[in-house]
Image (tube, rainbow, N blue to C red):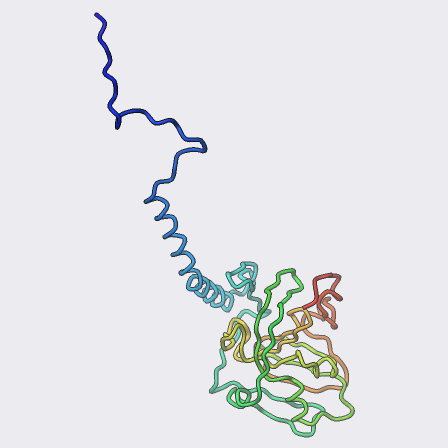
Length: 251
């Protein structure tokens, strides 16, 4: 016996399938937008946490493998020693000696009281990574050299660090450039220990290994003495894009 199928009422009628897949529901769309906004809001906190973790881990990593890990700020953490002592405003000292008339020792407060210069440049590492538009602030090295009274026999400047191992050098004319700083701040914050604080050298136009971290001594000499990495094959004159066999864009 044949039976007649009822005609579906208006709300029960099948809808034609829409092209391009199933539509996104309003609740799902709002949820996705909410998660995106949460991610944007949380990103700075997560980045700071990652930088802090990697910085602390690198300080206790004798293998140096932590330096292979990138972080949200784009920097990698390098140290040539297994550990570096921490310095602060109470115990930090920077000495200037050698071929000068007035050997001087600066505290962190002394350096902060001097006129500060702010530079915004790209940071370029010889290993290839680059961090664009990075602010550094500090005292021009030329100001400290002038105050010390550099003798006529001088031709270079040697830098020592309180890690007890790292050294660097510049010619006197390089050291007097306006874009060479004894830096106290980076990225608009006081230099953290992992970034070489409380004081580091910053040589803007050269590869970043010239910007010695944990700066403790500036000695004026007659000739350039190769630094830590130059003794291991890197160029002494480390201009970005014109040394070490690299063609990076100049900073």
